[in-house]
Image 1: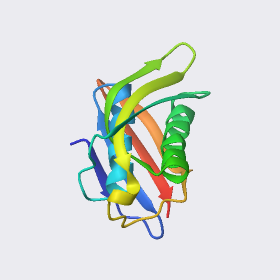
Image 2: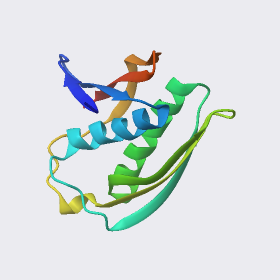
Image 3: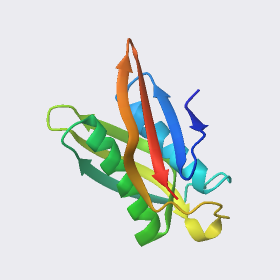
Image 4: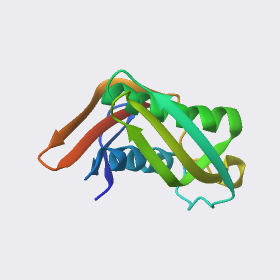
Length: 136
C-alpha cells in the first residue's frame, strides 16, 4: 500500500508508506494529486523542482507546498517522477517530474495549503510512514 486516506472532520488527511524516504515523498505526491483529481494524469510536460528543509518533516512540507505552487501558478498536475533524490547532508530535494495541465482534468477538491497539524514522518524498522493533513 502506497497511501490511504484517513477520516478528518474538516480537512483531508492521508498516511503514506515507503521503503525509502524518497518513496515517502513520491507517495505523498500521489496522495495529494489523488485527492484533487481521480483521472490518470498524462505525461505531456516535464518540470524540474528543488526544495530544501531544516529536517525531513520540514522538507516534506516544503515539497508538498511546492507541488501546490505548481498547481496554482502553472496549472501543472504531476503524473510521475522521472527522478527524485534527497541530499541527506544538506536536506535538499531535487526532482524531475512529468505531468499535464490541470485544465484537462475534472478537479473534485481544492487544496488551500499543507498543514503541520497531525503531521509526522517516522521510520519504523525498515519502513517509513508519514501523515499529512491538507487544508481544503
